[in-house]
Amino acid sequence: MTYSIITEGLVKRFGETRALDGIDLAVRTGSVFGLLGPNGAGKTTAVRILATLVRPDGGHATVCGHDVVTHAHQVRQLTGLTGQYASVDETLTGLENLMLIGRLTGQSRSAARSRARDLLASFRLTDAADRAVKTYSGGMRRRLDLAASLVSRPRVLYLDEPTTGLDPRSRNEMWDVVRGLTATGVTVLLTTQYLEEADLLASEIAVIDHGAVIATGTPTELKARTGALTLAVRPASPADLPTVLAVVAGFTRAEPEVRNTTVTVPVSGEDVMPAVVRRLDDMDVTVAELTLRGSSLDEVFLSLTGHRTEELEGSAA
Amino acid sequence: MTTVSTVMDSAVSDNTGNLAPRVGPLEGLRQTFSLSWRTLVQIKHNPAELIDFSIQPVMFLLLFTYVFGGAIGGSPHAYLMFALPGIMVQNSLFTTLNTATGLSTDLEKGFFDRLRSLPIARFAPLSGRILADLAKQTWALVMLLVIGTILGFRVGTGPLGVLAAFGLVLVCTLAISWALVLVSILAASPEKVQIFGFVVLFPLTFTSDAFVPTTSMPGWLQAWSKANPVSVISDAMRGLMVSGPAARPVVESLLWAAAFTIVFAPLAVRAFKRRV
Image (cartoon, rainbow over all chains, first blue to last red; front, side, top):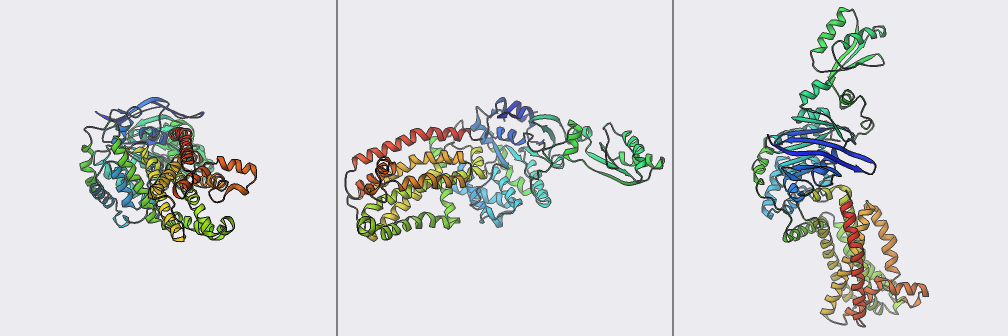
């Protein structure tokens, strides 16, 4: 088995803060690896180190066997970066932006032009090719950013929060595009704040918090461990609350939480719900509300770390 | 999305083989040209910028010649002979602000990080922008000379003198650009760079002999004006284009240029590398 990205004990300090506090990652060649965490967890710092934009203070990282510090130029030839911080020139057109990158990476004028045209076509931007990027919508802009990182045909692609701030429709479009990429053999390192996104796109996930990896595994493994679903039960009468709590606790290893008169608990499978219903019915408890929904990142965090993602609250971006 | 796969397909296997260990000097030069193309192509999309660096110097020229010229130099024509070289220096100096605001915009908007993530020469983003701004300056210089000549300016030396004068002002502003590059990295926003320009470049230019002979200034200001690099370069331009001693101010200008480069180039490069 080969790995395209390997990091060992990666440390990065900004003043007193340890943005990365010893990160170990191993990303399989050709896979999509999800780096999941709240704002400020260190995701972007990790990507910036792997894209040679920032030097680590400790540990080391290799991309396709090349050290990101000592062989940065080789790494840059193999990688593409799309993210909040790697953008395009807003005053140029989409075509000009892609051609510029093609020319910079050594393509002839005609090769750069045809490559740019192809990319614009496959990202459905042909109609906007000759418009200045500042007139693009958020979704178009992200697609162009992604196209820009593919100009030089990278073997490893960093997608730093590719859908943060996008509306649901653009987000779905972006997911389609990323899924399309995985068919090509390119290795993708994806960072995201959304559990759903990591679940949908990644074959392996590392959850990071305060600059450290707190859990790794396939989406299925993680969900089994943390409870990817959240069950919420609200009895019609508050008097039944202790009964509900006891019943629910019997079906999961996690600690149920009571808010107002609703009991919530992470569960690992859908089969829990009918069992809970049957049991409550047997005990003559009338239920006013019963829902099973996908857990939020916040809830996964709670079950992994015992604390909520304080950074996530009140930060839309 | 199958189309994306098609675009990527040929790709991934392409660059498995030999990777270049570093950027060759010729490649670095080519990347510089590509990036200066990018800066110049921006003008196409933002014609207001063309007005900015074409009309503005001409307006300065006309205003100074016809509004202040008579009062300062006795007649607009006499003043033009004195002031045109100075206006050229002023204009070139103010163009360095473009370098700084452009750079600072790139840093702020993240375009700079895109460039840094590419396998290109580390100096190319900087040299590309500076080269483009030199091209803009050359254009403005030629335009000032042509319009100045129409208004009555006469070259007193010859074509070689003019070429030397243009070369000199470009070398000097190139050196001063280093200071502006440093400012743009430290300032972290294009607006702050503009403020710096107004607070430093404006007084620097107007306390020189670029527009007026210094004889009517108070003694302390005369002393400063004499030392002011803008005066030194303006004197050298007059010597090279009109008449008068050229050798001494030219040498002094080049010394100033060297000093600016020695002090600010390492500081700018260091700030540049530290910026993460």
